Length: 498
Image (tube, rainbow, N blue to C red):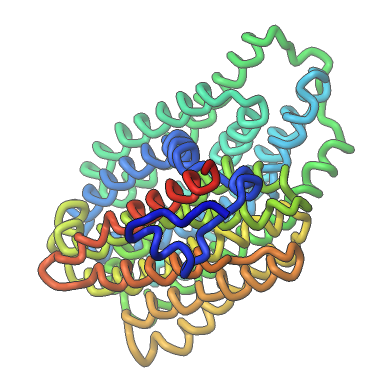
């Protein structure tokens, strides 16, 4: 074995067990490439974040806490329905297209079949929900005054559903530039429609902008798909709705569909409980906290799905899977913990900038909620591989376990502790991710966090908790994790090369 390097890192190496073989180092993510890929793949999430920031500030100024809470309920309902309506036509669509790009008629049949299913599902949902809009408005908002906004939202479902499936069709064709272009155009259009309509007509105007944006999204993505076909010299001639393909598509999606339903149903149930128990104002305050979590999740899940998951599929059954998972966890902590620290340390000024002073009462809730997001990151860094190795039931168990636990804890705690109970229940529920995730991954693959991973997990927890220090001093902890991970990776590479 080569001599241990001198200095602080060298003295720590034997204690932390940081010496690794060259073969082991090959089976892991490069921190630089991971960060670069995360940046590229998060481009859509970044544009969505910019849109969310503009929308949050607009809603805070024009609607106020009460209507922000109502608007959040409507968007949560939209997200829940949006999780169900695609019928799981997401990753399965991309997979079937990517597998058969040389068979143009079959690809075209997949495109047309998935598009027909998506559009039909959206239209049926709108037709079914329209007669019960009054009851739906009362259930979601606690008032019958919002029937028109709910109706407008319901009729945005068909084309949003179609646009979402076309997104996965383009992903299957690896048309990254076209995906990015269509996404950016949709975001720009959405903001351009949202601002004047909300200023002029309030909550109803917001829902009008949602409806017209659904039309724009379907047009932009469909146009890019048509251009991709033209660039490849392909035609839709001879393609038709194919029942065997439809059955195969739906077969891929049922686990993803059920997982999404659990996730968004828990959100709608907890937010509805908050609204009916604590009132619209409290629900509006929590939207600040939950909106922040949503942005973290969008960025994190974007690169986990598009960059990490394919690598895990390729390494399923390989002895290098454990090294790959541990390196992924390490990279995730280096990237995400600084964001968590900044969000906690600067929570008060961030709320004033992105919302308004009327929402500052939500600031004490942010450290609690963000610690739940930290638990989600460390847990999903391992649990993401369950689907990759074919353990779909375990995949569902992790997601459903967290969702059910959040709902149960919220029902028990909110009547006693009020609004503080909502982020507390959220954070406790996300213990399911590392607890179940680590246990199930170890059971099915034999992989688990190594000593270095546990050390980094503990230090990351200290950084996230310490970010709440007074006078914004917690911001000093932001560079700790990326610097530490960089130093550890660099020393391991040097040791392996020696």
